[in-house]
Image 1 (cartoon, rainbow, N blue to C red):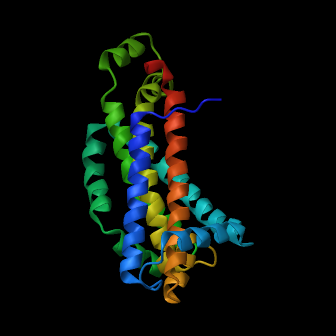
Image 2 (cartoon, rainbow, N blue to C red; image 1 turned 90 degrees about the horizontal axis):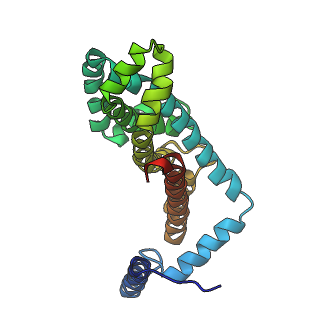
Length: 251
């Protein structure tokens, strides 16, 4: 089977190659694995991580925390977002709350969470707070963009409020939900790992990154970073695939 590449794919490959070359040059310049190990050593360390007996437990724990945080933020964000989109007064009440959460530094939230929660719960709390504003704001914007004439027609035919939300509002806000989910997961995934670095649960990518940094295993720090990037990229691909399936009717 013949495999062909587009111009954009060639440019992307060239970008990766250039980054690796720069990485190699910098590693040779510093000449110390304690500062910046060469890419080949880091990739070998990354491969060894995949063969570690605790790898699945470590990655799985971080994934479970991210999924739990996303579920809570999704339920809260969609629920409040729908109400805010329908009710302008509630939207005015909720807006300062969302602005406050978005403007608060993640590190401040983590430090407070370390006082309030157990180490394993801190990343979940941080994920929820980080992702909630994105989902809520996008759902609200989606609700407000719904054609009012379509809603009035549904009301004219005596459709119930629940049916209008289910059959009019939700299909219209799906693109907004996808967009909000993409942004939320991108920021939330990084926040979860940051929370793990500081809270140090028994298992977690952030925990292993902090342990590696403590013993100056820079190659292990970068290796775990590569693992986190790969998982984040997979999340993004799943979201884009879901977007294509859910709103294919628009194309």
